[in-house]
Image 1 (tube, rainbow, N blue to C red):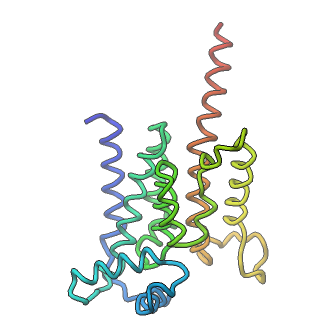
Image 2 (cartoon, rainbow, N blue to C red; image 1 turned 60 degrees about the vertical axis):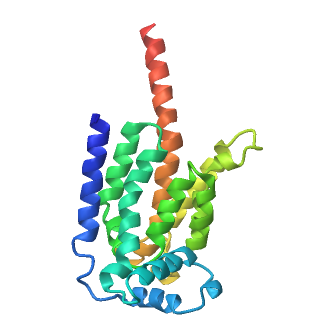
Image 3 (cartoon, one colour; image 1 turned 30 degrees about the vertical axis):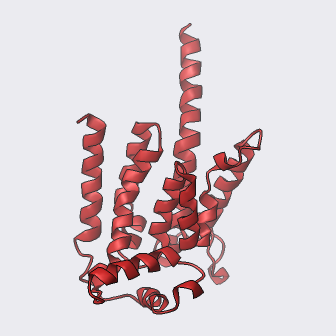
Length: 232
């Protein structure tokens, strides 16, 4: 087992502990009750969260219909833990991938929403996987339409240059990261992590993908190319 795999195993273990240790202790939060209400609706009538609802129904079959707080949140905690492995699998530069996996494992925003029965973290997982398996964008969109901002520009092969698309999508993700939807608090708000945290999971994930897959390799290539020329 090489060093990178050992580090990834450690990161994954930390992510699991942070998410599962207290998963079933807290009572259901008001937004989680909204999810339960959606579960009780007709599956085809739901405009989003289709995939989490479907997984919830499958889990309930094996639990004989009784769903404790732990099992209601289980799929979301699992998705949050698997995000670390997904980043490592998708990003080719494995050193950069380890940093992305570590960030996903311990970032408070990701940890918090991984322990809540809401669709943001599962959508992030599907978005990450869609950068290697394009079909995964389908369950991402069926989880929440906001996933569209994380689409991999490689799907637009007919474009001669992708840099403009990448720039636009990155700017859009950053804008959503900074913007408050309740306008009474203004456009920029330093308290966004404690107020409208649900908005930012997918934009942050998209930013990480664009930066780790495109920006970091480009900078490293330019840096090492210039360094090599300087030595010559």
